[in-house]
Image (cartoon, rainbow, N blue to C red; front, side, top):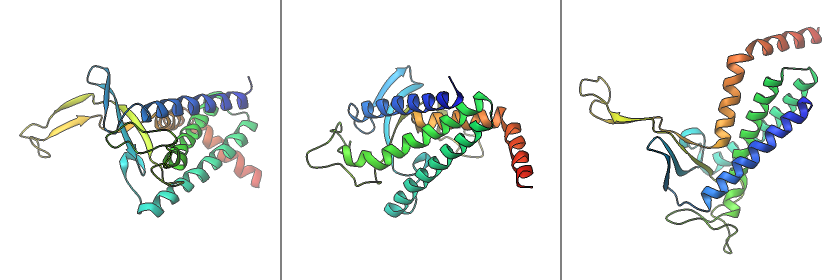
Length: 210
């Protein structure tokens, strides 16, 4: 397989797996429902994220549209940049890393753009696909489906602690999805193994301009 074929295969695999999992969660769980996969430290926990990472919302409904459109533009730039780098014969690992980032970005855009149109809400009930009365939101206002929850450490801060003394703490608290994981793995791999490649590419581009 060529590097372009590898990239598109990775993108297709992540997008299909991400959407299958999200649709399964949306049509089988109500908001807040748990399913313990491995003990108390790997749980499928259904939440919906209306904004950015960790549930942060940006400037209400207008901010939601802006954020979704920004993600679309960013995804388009990532694809353009990936195709440009493939022509420069970059390492296959870097191709895979960028493809993971692109697939993750698009996976979450799909939720934001379309889930509000094709699903009913999940408050106290399992969502209905293509409900007769319409979806729970308008175009670009959907919520991202998250489900992976790893509360690896569940305890209480000691009384002598200078911060949060006696309060409960959970590590790792954020709930995320497969698309988020793809983005994280892609960025992490680039930072760990391919920073020097980007430095070389930057020097090449500067020389080309001269």
